[in-house]
Length: 115
Image (cartoon, rainbow, N blue to C red; front, side, top):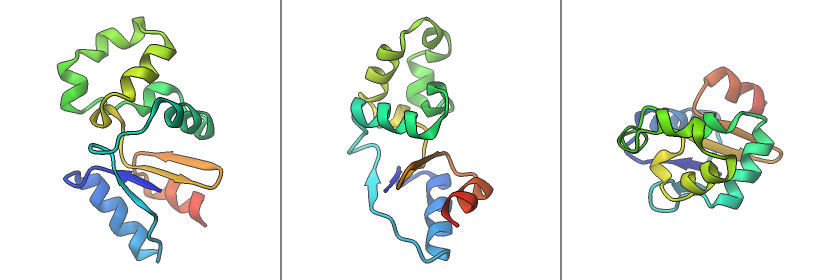
């Protein structure tokens, strides 16, 4: 499954890259159908990444909520709950596969995971 925002240039690049590899995962609009807290917990565990990597730190929602200063004071539970309230807070694209989760588009990382 590919979680993206249609207007995001990085998402468009990731989608084009997947298509060039003959792959067309199920598409999910992260803004209109944001991940649930349960999904985020599962995906973070599968990814092996720190929870902070799941935040879209360059997004308007992140900046308007002043999360740079607030996140360090929040519990992990509070962070998961917050992420599940607004898909625009979540780093994108997210590629969820059998036993792996990729956060953000890094071509080398995606190549290694999919070959």
